[in-house]
Every structure is written in structure tokens, then in C-alpha cells.
Length: 492
Ligand code: ADP
Ligand code: ZN
Ligand code: MG
Image (cartoon, rainbow, N blue to C red; front, side):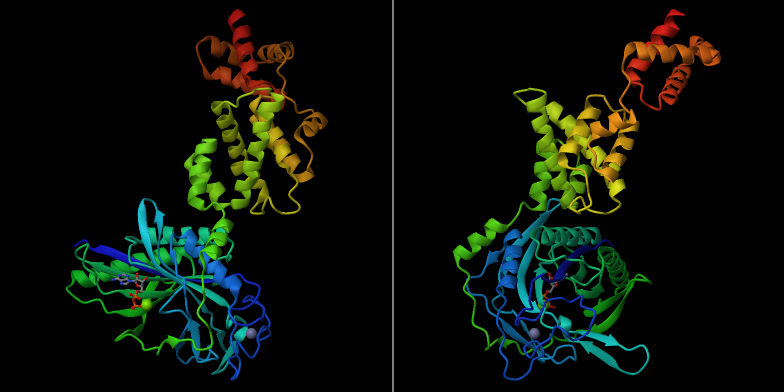
């Protein structure tokens, strides 16, 4: 039996703000020394009052705008009451009735995933269960850190799409610069809700899976649940509505607790905080701060530079490298105009330069960078120099073999390419007479391959070209070499 898969996500995101959500303690959940970024407010001492962090509110609205949400005019905060040792106030300030954002969507791979809401709340502290004795420690550095929660409708239809959607969200959050959204560090946490049904319009019993701290875990857990639930349904059994955990080493989900009825958190409007007033003016100003988002950028890079899908994706995922690429391309545009004195930049020529540029950037330069960024202080190649490097390859002054050596030198010394070529004597030999001299030498030293070629063995020619290249350390112009060889072999 085949089933329809429905997956809805709940995504938590620690916002990168200077201070915590309701007090002016430092927002630094990575702080190693426990309980130093704390104060009476985030410890929930009686008599203290929370103050709303505007920066956090702005960041959530930005996320909402980027995800096509409606921004509420009067969002409010609510109390979610429950006791847990990592929650010093015994309630969490969250938003239930009037969140900041509602009714958005993200289109991905032709599918529209609706976003039910995005709200703002506060993170809890961290419990450290002792491995030695029968006790746990609690660190409140994280208590009160601004936490954004995004809830989707169950519109995702496969495990792979759940992974893709989560990755795209992370990329958008990073473009918006609202969080580093690192899953491994717990800055972004994804929970999946998943159900199977026999018809598209039916809703099966959903299971929630928590503790997914990588995209791989999101995909693998969804795959596992699809298999597990299919099997149950095939056997005529029922899926139990429950919360399950994910064991990354065994790659299985396991039951954590059954959800017999909705838990009663006794939500009520937070009496210590006023409602917010989000004016059109605020929305307009935040809209203006939103940079070009990944999908727009994909389309533009494709259109403007004629890049293939894979190259586009490298530059979209690696924002720094993408910006560097575009800086180099604007240098190259200038080169065509000012040096080559062409009034109109031909698209064909520009696309060919873009292709060369992106190839050398993605394979060779990234290889040299070894994961470091072009934004780093010790990255020495200016966009002008990289552009010059590309023009030298384009004009045939640098063979592809020598190009790698030159790039290596540019990378380690920060010198411009013509300087390196001159210093190391690396320029391409394209002088007819010079090449002819070398070709004649090679021909006289290799009578056997010459014979073979004359008997019709085509690859003997390649062998001789290789000999010329070896003799010149790759500097002989391949086109001239080939032509000269053909001419000399044909006339002798
Ligand atoms: P609950 O009240 O149990 O928390 P909600 O309706 O608030 O459930 O939804 C929580 C999450 O579960 C949302 O992301 C939603 O898209 C998802 N969800 C709801 N129903 C289903 C379903 N039948 N299958 C898969 N996901 C679902
Ligand atoms: Zn505090
Ligand atoms: Mg819910």
C-alpha cells in the first residue's frame, strides 16, 4: 500500500542579539563559564519586570517579511505555564494568541510550503546531567535568550523535501543575518511532525520527532518514520500519537511520551508586558533592510552571468565567495570596456569570462582556501588581480597548467599575475619560430613515434605534443604546437 506523506515542521532559532529577550544580560549561549550572564530578571526573581528587546522583535519581523507573512499590527506576549528545573520563572514568555507573523509561505522546487506563524519566545536554561552522581546541574546563561519559533502547515510531502526546506530556511536566516543558525550548536532546532494517510485529503495520526540536530537527522528520521508508520498501517495497526526522539547512532526513532490529550499550559496574556504596535512605517523600514534573498540571487546569477545550476548554487551557498565573484566580474566588464575598448560588452564574451572565472574560483581557488573565507584578512588576491588572471587565460597567455601555478603564487604572496609570470618566466611561448625549433628537435629525437604517425597512428601525434609540452614545462602554445607538428610531419 502507498500512503500520502504529510510533514509539518516546528523550527526554533536562537536570534543573534546583543542582549537577552527581556533583560540586558549578554546573549551568549556558547559561554563556557556557567551562570555568569544572569540577573534577577532572567532568573525569575519576584518583583522584577521584563523589558522587550526591540532588536529581537525586528529580526522576527524581517524573517516574516522574507517568508511572505502577514505582520500583525498588535502582537502580544502570553505566559505558558509549566514547571521544569531549567525554567526559573516556572513559565515561559511566548506568543499564542497574537504572534508577530502569520500566513506566510516559502516556495521551494515548485512546491509552496505554507507557514502558519512565526512567534517570539525565550529560551530555557541548560541542564547538565552528571555522569558521576545522582544529580543534575543547571546553567542559566541560555535562559531568556531570544528564541524565534516558526510553524509550517503539513505541506511537505517527503523526507528529502523536509531536508531541503530546512536547509533553505537556514540559508535565508543567514542572509537576513538574524542568527548563525548552526544546527550542531543548537542555534537552529528542527522538529518534524509526520503522518501517513490513504488519501490526499485525509489526515493521519501525527507523530512528532524531536532532538534532530542536523539536516541529515531530519531526513533520516522522516524516512525512518515513513517506513515504521507504513508497516503499522499495512498490518492494520494504529499509529499512536506521540513524541519520539531520534537516536543518531542507531538511526531509529524511539517513543518518549504519549500525548493522550493536549497539555494544559494555562496560557494567559502576559500581564507584565504591553502589546506591541507594529506600524506600516516600521514594516517599510525593515523591508528596506532585507538583502537580496537566495532564490532571487539564483535567478539573477543565472541570467546575468549565464552560469550553470551548480556554479550558481556554490555562489548562493557561499555568500562571501559569491560577492567576490561578482566583484571580479565587474572588473572584467571594465576590462572589456576600457582595455579592449569595446563600447558594447558582448554577452557571449562576458559569459565566457564568467565561465572561466567561476571554474577557477570554484575548483582551484576553493581548493587553496581549504574552507577559509575570501573575507579573511589574510586572503591576498584582490578582485582586480583575479580579473587580470582570468583575462590572461582568456587571451591564451596562460595555459591551464601554468594558470594553476600562477594562482598558487597569487594566493600565497599576493602578487599580481603579470608580476609572477615575468618573475618566473612562465609566459606562454607562442612565437612560431621558437616553437618550430623545439618541434624539429623533438621530431629528430623520436623517430619511432614519427614513423607510427605516418602509418596512421593518430595518438602518436598526441605523444609528440606531450614531448614538446614536457620540454617547455607546459609553456608552449598548444594550438601553435599542434599546427607546427602537423606541418613538419606532413612535409618530411
Ligand atoms: P498540536 O496541537 O499537536 O501541537 P498543531 O496543529 O499545533 O498540533 O501542529 C503542530 C505541527 O504539526 C505543525 O507544524 C503542523 O503542520 C503539524 N501537523 C499538524 N497536523 C499534522 C498531520 N496530520 N501530519 C503531519 N503534520 C501535522
Ligand atoms: Zn538577565
Ligand atoms: Mg502546537
